[in-house]
Image (cartoon, rainbow, N blue to C red; front, side, top):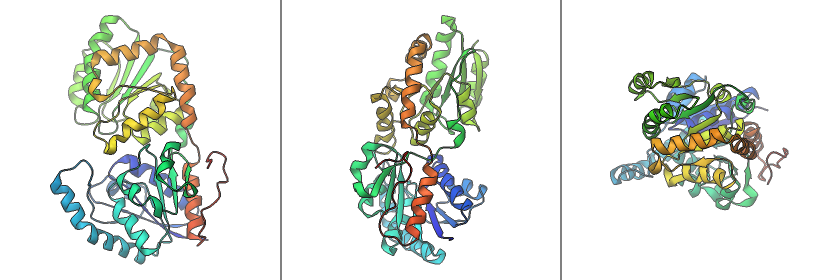
Length: 370
């Protein structure tokens, strides 16, 4: 049977790509799909590129923004919710799937007010503001960490992990060759990572360390860093963007990057040793909480952004390079956070909700324990 589903969530790739993974499963199963987002977020470009219909609502952030922005967002919320309700009704939505982000707020509110089952995915250790507000009104909450269940009714939540492309699960540990460090601050780059990496180059060269650096800088600082790297006397590549991150993982011994839910789940799926540098201005400091979940399990290392210097980066890399047993331990332990089949499970829950059944669906796959 074919159902009509609305998917929402956006602003960044961390919200959009997992939603697209769920949409792909739903499309393969023959359902009608509609994305709802904003014109300013990455969804406005990515969703149409993947061949999905999209409608837009107005929505703004309320967390870590100025008073004026908060006022404008709150003042415009009633109209945004009314617009979202109109979209749901016109499309005939039978269930709504939300990946979060500020665009999701009006759509989730519209689903609740319209009596449409709402399924949310919360991959972070600390739920976002919108998800906390609707926590007890959801049909099902699909979560990334066991600790996050404290925010949701036990009978309505389960651990699924975040949809991750299958290629990451196929990554095998690098066995030989020059010790390679992959540094990435995400598609837009990270200034603090770029700065610390640059500061570490003279230290690496002076130590005579046999090492290779692959650094995704983001577009803004690429030209300056690439030019300086060419004269640094170190093997490697500085690039603005890496389109195939799973392939980059396969050639790396160590990953240094941010701790967004997408990055953490990809690292877990690939079984990568990592040093995480949480973005300090993430909502509710959730990147630090994500990193701490891995660090407390001995599955990753962490450097706070305020402590990140070229010398600190150099020392972390050298310690792990000289102690392969520590690298192996990080790889082995991080895999416990990897969950396969998250997109398929989300599709299953959506279908169950659309069928009109009031109870939440049983978890059939042992990868998703209650």
